[in-house]
Length: 337
Image: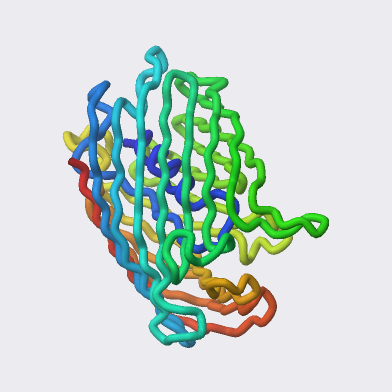
């Protein structure tokens, strides 16, 4: 089950990490898909549809995100080290974003996320599309989406450590360099994971870094932390770091006949959303808030909610307004067939 959590994190980082639209869609929290594990058979296939709903309420604005999507898996996603990989993983999601109090930034915005990854032996091929705009797909202009393709090679793989290195090409609006508009740029691909009884760690760098950490992964009490940069602007880390940290109690350990499938958590996170006005690159609306939250995870169902604080709105990267306090609720359903 722990390996599947790590694989799920890889999927969600792929969906949102390619050179970026600032927080156009927030990565899903790691969540097991019930029932059982897709790792049991060597050449099986599996489909896992997913539904999610999130409502964020601040004093100045309310936001609603409702979406649906699916994962498709073929082959053994985590074969033993002695066996070669040969697997396919595909995911597609649609998430409309609604501003409940209408502003000049058109609502709804259509979030579309597509990711594909094919592994054959030590070779890995990736394709990604991530965009959010009031005009779906390419209608909003280059500044409302990113797409990319890449290739990586698995240099090291053993029971405790895995290291993958490669490169790709990103397509989108990446600003200007010496007066030249950058619509196509090279992007590195770096992945490594470490798994020990005391901790497990996964790091991925497509063009921006993402990190997942579990302290005491084999204990019923454990700490989890997910961190993702929304751009490489480390000087403005407050607006570019998306994170969630939680202390978990898992009801059952791996010796249970259904495995480690349920738990509760208390933690802290931030909620980040961004909207660009179509065809006007300079018009941008961004909101960020922090939250203390609780979460119930039943594998197929995940419920979370909490108290938002220190919310703020940012207009055109310059004008900042206090968005106040509030609350959020989130529901996510996923079932593996």
